[in-house]
Amino acid sequence: MESKEPVRVVITGAAGQIAYSLIYAVAKGQVFGERQVVLVLLDIPVMVNVLKGVVMEITDCNFHLVSKVVATDKLDEAFKDADVAMLVGAMPRREGMERKDLLKANVNIFKVQGQAIDQFAKKTIKVVVVGNPANTNALICSKYAPSIPKENFSALTRLDQNRAQAMVAEKMGIPCNEVRNCIIWGNHSSTQFPDLNFAEITVGDKWVPAMPAINDDDWVKNEFVTTVQKRGAAVIAARKLSSAMSAANAIVDHVRDWWIGTDDENDKKMVSMGVWSDGQTYGIPEGIMYSVPVKIDKKGNWTIAKDLSINQWQREKMDLTAAELLEERNAAIEICDAE
Ligand code: NAI
Image (cartoon, rainbow, N blue to C red; front, side, top):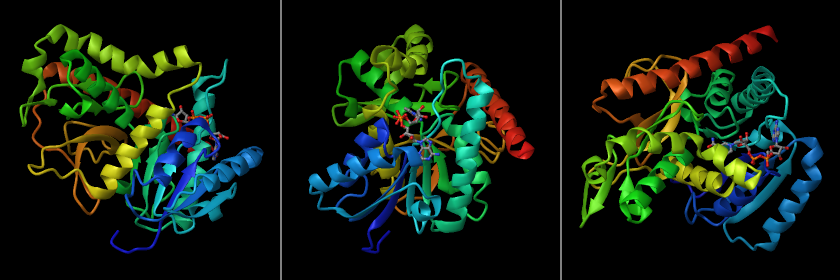
């Protein structure tokens, strides 16, 4: 991280709508600061022409931090020596498509990308999976990249955290940057558990627990939880397209914090990431990519936030989303094994 070499960043689904916002933010220095980047844009062969247009626009932006752009449909070229991979591209669910068919298409995408990462990327690569089902795709990607530590793979749940924090800010009539530590447990799906028990807001110049200030248990347990869980669907219903600007913004938050750390003066800040569960923490089953609150040091190593006390209501919600992830994992592995 200290070298002055450009950071080699792979963005998949680079011709798609999330990438259109994401590329701009990465090129502008919002993730790696004033550090040069090589932008590697991967999409499928039918999108190569669209990618050419994206590259023209990058050129026309005169980004001073972009040292090179590589646009490709080849996995080996894309992942060669990659430092960071933002795996956005995935097969979208089409009308009439069974959940199993969607899973099958995506398992295969993330299996071959995992194999390419294993073979061509730096062993220190940091991977964030965005394409849905993000947690299970991240699991499969990591399974097929055994030479890379499992800790280097993650699934995006930061958008859900950001949605939760925006709701608290709105409820309290305060700016978003005065809310932190809203936690997302579990799957990036409608079973996720957005949890305010450890959330904080600022009063004066101090961080204080948010729950007593919100003082509305019914809202916290009902409207808040279901609104965050269903926010993605609400955006699709309104826009006829899934969240893109806010997804890109969340990827920026996720990777920036992973790259430079979340350390604040008291080490109290937590962010949510879908990460490998070793079965040792908070009763989360082993072998799934489950979203948890993490703290990240300045070298980019994350650890699960410790000593959070979990009550019965939280336990039930956490177990429900774990059960869904176990089911997805088993279906995905069955598909892989049948190949
Ligand atoms: P999009 O359909 O606009 O773009 C997807 C791009 O991926 C397309 O250009 C497509 O050609 C490409 N692609 C498909 N298969 C590929 C492969 N094997 N390799 C490389 N590129 C491939 O979709 P959008 O809106 O950009 O969303 C991308 C994904 O992100 C979707 O799966 C969506 O559900 C997911 N998503 C996840 C969120 C999260 O919080 N985890 C939030 C919002 C979206």
